Image (cartoon, helix red, strand yellow):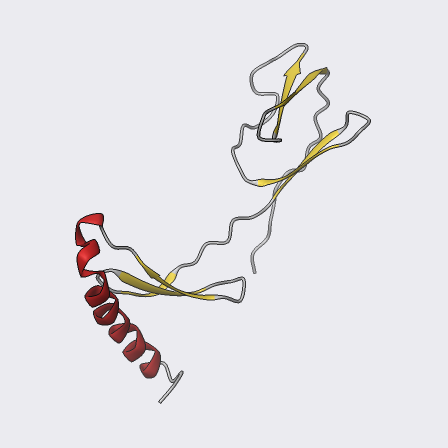
Length: 123
């Protein structure tokens, strides 16, 4: 059994928030602390949902990135069963082989179909 021993900590930082409106209607939000000090919070770069409320409050909630580990990998194609309920067949072909793309697609899908048949998905 796995246990999660993460420490939840709340840090209060006083400062100024700068909100810049761009021509693309995207807001750029920057928080500038009054007394910056190294190690006050852990740095991170992630995706999520940020909300800037009309009273000046800002909150950011990170969302977990769903990664799809390939079930089968071929020369140019891979098959993965996603945690989000979607199955994916992905082709990655270099630009130099663009003229051969129809042939690569036909040849790449056949091993995936055989793999699925071995797993009992279809006859």
